[in-house]
Image 1 (cartoon, rainbow, N blue to C red):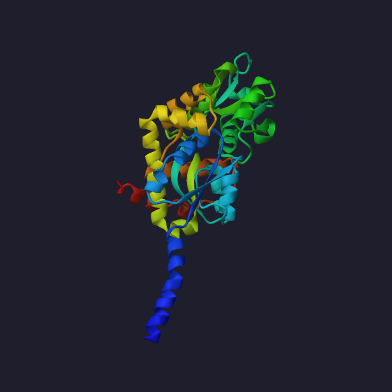
Image 2: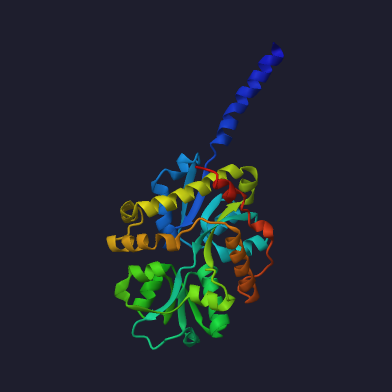
Length: 326
């Protein structure tokens, strides 16, 4: 009887801990600008994660590279749009992270003011070019494209970093000669009267001789979470897919969410919705992994990133498992 009472006492003491472990919050971080802001706003406003059994806490970051730094320090568990170039770099340094999905295609264009005499990328030598901050995927890929396709080394133009709204302001005030902006931003700000002189998609095809579109953002998770609790990562992927499908089916609802949570005016929210499927993705097929590997080879070959690539960085198991969830 005494042994039984001791056992009951031990189990009683352990139950709160077990319950706490089962209900552990998953800290999801994202950058509150560009593509991530719109998608994150919809994800937060709906119960997709909760319906999949995920207790999530959202962490907002004002800097594009901040979610990756938070993953490295253990401040968050998962980011649905971490900058790919940065993920490659920190993984090579030994930071324990894994990529679980390709989520943000590089729907980006090099643009100049309509009245600018610049007509091609080769004319950006010695010019001021606005891009997302140094270290972001847009900056790394953009710099690589200028170097490899236009013969402009990184030290032969001035990279002016900023978020999308700041870059638009720079263009309006003639503080930069050109900028690499998301197609979304170009369409949201027709009053700027911009002219496209090249797109990441076309320049990447020219560089790699392939039709694969490069990615700027990937779903990234702390290694211990995907190793110790792969089912939770699987459920998160299912919820992220639910978000995409719901947004596609409810464009008017997405517009209203973006007006409230992202503080976008009606026309800008509508522009985002029109590009919903071009900017957001949830895929991790073999073809996606091959594209990511090619990106690493190109970026490393140009000197834009350092370090080798370990295939263990890519973990498609939760994505594959998520296909079986209804």
